[in-house]
Length: 597
Image 1 (spheres, rainbow, N blue to C red):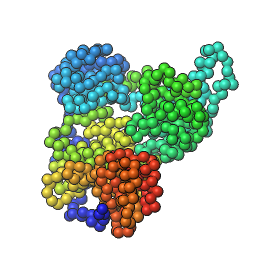
Image 2: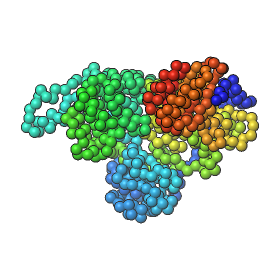
Image 3: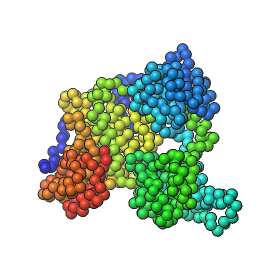
Image 4: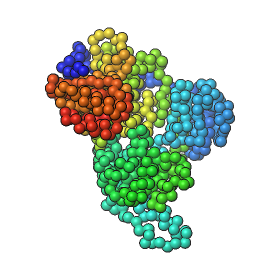
């Protein structure tokens, strides 16, 4: 297969000019750095319009705190109707401009269809939105907002409560005394002072747990690929790799979202790497722990104790070995269950709903507003490319590196005002954040979500000579000031760099670091740095073929014959760890990485 040399890099006559992708569309958040000579500036769009001669009507379908109700009543007519059947909800909804629910009400497609287009916003009093059909909401032009921050302190406090209760056997000792026993010697605990706590996920809740644990005299380390190192250092926390965190911790507190990447992240393999006698706390999501593996680790003495507020299935089976285990402390998903948190949720969701009804962009929106069909149709393949480049780039970041600075470059022959790239930037943000986050990133909340994570995105436009028939020639994503899992992805200027183009409607990866490649961004990709020599494609292909892993594309980029080269391989199936090890054992392979796109 022919290799593409970097000396053949396309170098058209260009005029570089910085670009605000929302320059004439939307005001930019302060987390984005761009400059542009604006040709014209239009007012920010409003996605919801309410008649000013009548109050809107808000249907509150589940119990909401009084503080939230008071906010709503100052602006709208409020109908508190609880325990509605699906039929009753569909009947009422045609008379309502907004709907507020908790987790017990299903807001499905039938609800949106029954609204006749009047329903403008759905507020979820809480974080999860599993009970709301986001696709149907977007199709019907309805904004969906939630209340993601009000529960932070409550969840952190519950995590600390479980940590201390577990360390001193509070639950077990309480049950023993109430059973008429007095077993002081049986329930000797462990001290927290000087012990190492690994906080797995250093977001809002994780950082608050870390602050409180420091106050208890614990040494706190954390793992989170997005957490800025300076923010961690400010509260005396050291960011480390995943393996270092689990290997050195006396206590492990989980605060990561449940995503395909984190599902059962604590399993037989990871438990085997832990210090014997480690203690586990989980107030995040039940699915991040393989519960059968945890039982085995408890029985083997690898895990001394566990304190759990969340489970894979809720409520868990009554005969669950994990629930009944004598060294496990459990609570029924009480992380957000404080009076103060419930009032905070009510206020947060009420403010979001009122803001949306006023026509303001909601920072807590979890679905995208409607984008003109003609714009989406033209940009559709580039939207896919943008998200996949974001996903690819962030998976190249080494664990422990905080992603803080991202630069996006668009190359196009179109004038700045003729190319609306706000959807592309939102999708790059989505790709960067969603693989390790439970946040839904979209056109509405992309700027806010990036800012909350300390992620600064700058944009640059390269204006090409030629026909403006195609909206874009290529998109390039660079991540600065991070280490890479694949050293060859680092460009000459020191950033992780990936670049892609759309070919025949399909997104392609065309550059990694300083190496040109050409591989379809479908399925998954294996990147290998190798010594350029005959037979390498065959050797890697044979390893994959022997394990029935189908290759969809393969491309090699090199500086010069018999020098270093990068091989990009598209695969339809995920290779096993054994297959990847065999690839790494090929003598001429200097490094490799497997990435899901």
